[in-house]
Image (cartoon, rainbow, N blue to C red; front, side):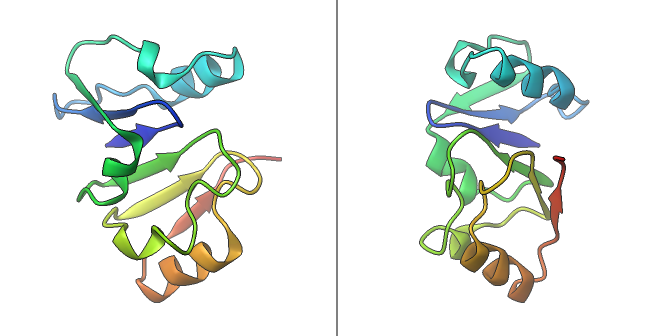
Length: 108
């Protein structure tokens, strides 16, 4: 599993649930960025790198339109989770649908 914001991507390299998604969401809500996360069994990278990785779940964070028609073709995740309005553009969602990659929206 991997997540990204404007500042860093985080990859679970432990393979046993090293990323705690609710904690990461709260981390972002409190004004922190992923470059400040230092947990065991993770690897940090540039955020754009994650779009091209073969991962189970991709959670693009923070920036409106971070997943867009320019980078959606590169997505290799099995599932994309959107936790805020507008993080995945309409055109990107259409591309994901054509690639048969489910987009799950988790916000009210």
